[in-house]
Amino acid sequence: MVLNSWREYEKEIADDRYYYARSCIRQNFFPGSETTFLRIMRQLGKDVYDDPRHTSCTGIGYHTDIVPLDTTMAVVARQFALMTEAGYENMAISCITSFGLYTEILETWHEFPETEQRARENLFKATGREFRKPKNIAHTSDIVFHNREAIRQMAVRDLKGLKVVEHIGCHYAKIFPKSGIGGSEFPYVLAGMVEAWGGQVVDYPERRHCCGFGFRNYLVKANRGFSIANSRKKLESMKPYKPDFMVANCPGCAMFLDKWQYALAEMENTTYGADGRGIPVLTYEEMAGLVLGYDPWEMGMQMHQVDVEPLLDKLGVDYDPAAKFLGRAGKYIGAPKPAGVNSFEGDRIYRIKN
Amino acid sequence: MYFELLTKDIRLREGLKACMNCGVCTGVCPSAEFYDYDPRQIVCIVQSRDDEQIEQLLKSDRLWYCGECMSCRPRCPRGNTPGYIIQALRTLSQQLGFFTESEKGRQQLAIKRVIGHHILEKGYCITPRLVAPAMHPEQGPVWDWAVGNDTDFWTKFSPNYRGAGAGALREIDSDAIAEINRIFEVTGGKDFFDTIEAASDRKARQMGFDGADESYVNHTYTFNSGNHGA
Image (cartoon, rainbow over the protein chains, first blue to last red):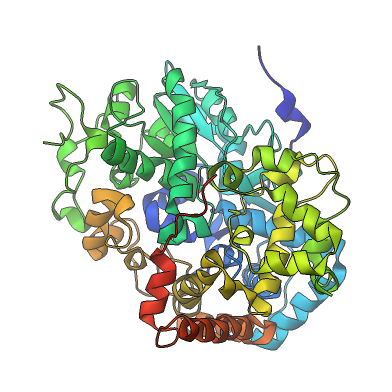
């Protein structure tokens, strides 16, 4: 049965000329994914402005309740001012927390106009800057979704025969369902990419459950049991469906679903992949890049704790195993210590725990 | 009194319409699965406008269990958002200094010192060296390897890593940092930080620490009484 409920929630996505708002989390954990997004946009002939002046939106501080709403609004207003000064009108936002926050602030300004006035006054007083609101805001996964057919036409391989779990960051559409393709119940932004490129999307009971970040529940060491327990709930739920990989549009989710598999393997000696290893967790930029034939190590896929080589082999990617741990200019910088999540009885190809 | 203070926060006005106590928010809540926690009760208490109960809530651990995933928001059949109500309560709890009365509330100081200071000093919520492997064993050996080789590794993807220009994890220049700091001053963000510090310092001394020093911050960051389970 084909579910088309997502079509009730479609949104306009600008086609070109984007002001790029980078993500704190993605820059830290998936620096190659942002590089890959820009590379895909160049291949598609799109204009994306990467501004050195923009900063964090304060999103993690806001959602841990140490940064007041007025402060966050003025910081976001500053990003809008930088966009206005650069001559752009469309925001392309790399982070899901930022995307949710930008959406929320624009909605709040609409519903409570006095808050927009205060943000304008605060920004001007602090920086002398003024701004126009963006004509269009999109998460960068929206933009890849928007171009999924063009990417398919340029593809060197497809995802045929692969079962894919998609995970949507909570703040993509749970706060404002109309802001996301497919809304909060039937988000289609990643499923649409997977289907367009030939993969099979896995439906499973905890598909819409939070990855377990929970802001203060991960950031504070004493609270991390919350985080791993919620990731575990999702992993247990998806395991019987034997996914070949996961893909997430939120940089935090992609990181947690990867790293907590490592921790669970160490703590409980449990792995969730059908082959006994962990389940690789990709960003959508990496998934698109593989379809387009980009080198996995140039996309930073060596940053994953769960090895991606078994997936690369299923896809028929011709990669150089020895190039995985090379730094800038091909310099060998050693290799990470082995980990249980990557071991598999009889495994002689990939790294083995012992 | 407390309810009137809360209504000054637009998130309370937006988040609380009229709750019928159906509990859908609790059913979908990741925190309710992990902690002894029920967001339905939080909404019920605020809706009651009972000062005594609200004050108790502002001083309690259960105010700090929510992960702000906002899964409750699209599910409420009456258009309430428990997550917004919690944000308003947490802000008030810090303004009044009540957050230091609970183990989980006291953690706000550690978050302020780590994330808050990083935003003001670097312009990012986090950078690789902040996620120190010793404090983040769950990040695993790949993160340990990457951070240990950060300059050689991140420059592979971002030539301007910790340097001038555009790109991932570039150094944000002093003019931009100064603007962010002025925004915090003008909008009350700095005052809010000072309020967290002052209340934490008082509490730390009550608890036998020599003020809100590193030892107290480490305590709030790592201590878990184990009294939070479902």
